[in-house]
Amino acid sequence: MENIELIKAAKKGMRNAYAPYSKFQVGAAVLTIKNNVYTGCNIENASFGATNCAERTAIFKAISEGEREFAKIAVVSSSNDLTYPCGICRQVLGEFMPNGEVILVDKDDNIKIYKVEEFLPYRFILEDDK
Image (cartoon, rainbow, N blue to C red; front, side, top):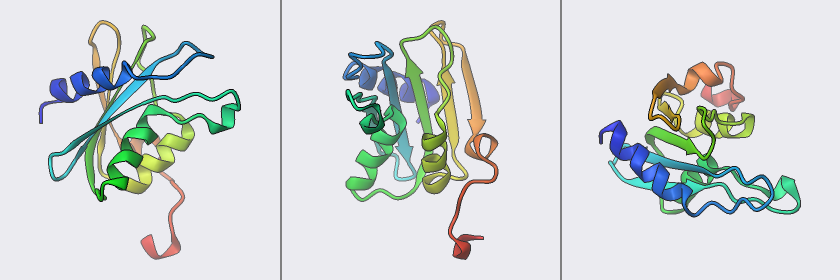
């Protein structure tokens, strides 16, 4: 799948964002190695610790459907700038797609692509995974 198509899916997912507190809407679309796409959005809560980011929503949705291997994820937001994954999302990306790519896009459709390992080169892993 082309990056532009994955970005379009992330933008579509962003429309479902529930962000009444921050007004900061985020969308994500993750591509599995089976070429399936799962979208996600940020979902806020008055107890901010219960908030879930778009990246994790997309990945968790895919995992709940039996997916385990991911190729890339696109992340978009309502801001003017690129929106980078938070620390918790970086750890989740590192767990489920350590060799994957993160595609970020700003409001002018400028695209930046990173390897997941660039975001979190020393992620927490099980001893058996070393």
